[in-house]
Length: 450
Image (cartoon, rainbow, N blue to C red; front, side, top):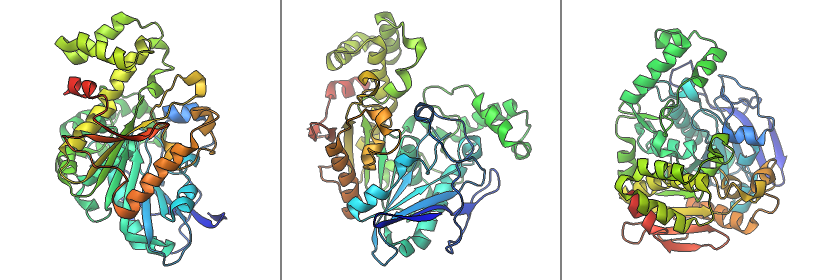
């Protein structure tokens, strides 16, 4: 399905691979006729999908599609941006309106590619890493065909948010991805979801038991509905949500994922939003009665003997928060900000850190600058359906320009326009209404965690 938008072109629903269940993808060559109606991988709706509603495409196991947005099908040799969507490795699709690449294409004279990949048990049961290998297959497609769409296969930047960001970090450790991308931008990567082969084996057995299957071979014969039902009944595997995610210590990812990402020489930009966890906690009714006693209990679990110091420092830096919000601030650092800072500190190659701080005005402002709120700003898509419901009626267009321009400059030159991160200065670019580079922002909190 193809149409022209303004001066750019969209090529939607291109099949890049096919795959048998739980097997590696098989690449498909593009011959100009391999477009299909958009579909998404089988899944249950995630938090953001449920909040925004909309009309997502139908689900199909044959879901390995990508979309290309380009200024023109010429020999322009433009920088290529490959988007990997988030969704906890269990939901999402490349076809979400927020991921429309037209504005980036027209702003930066770049080519944008967005990809589907297999999710949940179908993508990450045990150590199959099928969803990661799907991303590799899509990147191979880019190498083979993106020049036909005006892109430069020797200048490919991968970018993604949440599970998309963590999936990108896993690509650094995937030998099959070597040479297929040249730099990466990880937005709010869910690093704690990454897991070992031992953990993967444990969660696979739990899934098979719930499915009523005695082997992976038996699971191949199950219906998609039964697979999704068993997947949905899986107990949460701790705060890291490791039931289905990239797995190290196996044939496709033999090394430590974070170890490989730390030593890889390809440049990386990594960052978080200020209030990640408010997306998941604000409307949780079980937290409505939380008091200072719950603050003490939750902080004590994390900080032990330094609990009182930690509570005092978080209260100083988040003075207008109730008990649930204060705990959410701590959980934001635990789940997102501290792991991102740690990877940036461990990296031996060029690395840049940022903090996105643009509070949403929707729902009376209770979401703050929460998980996912930066996506429409990155794509310069503040007018897309559902954005105003999530961000409010007057999002900051100037921040969208700053954020998307930084991505485009990184794709073009290999460097964004601020100083790299290191263990001495810890330079962090603030994207918000008061932008600028800050050395080691909220250092007292970082030191509490370390």
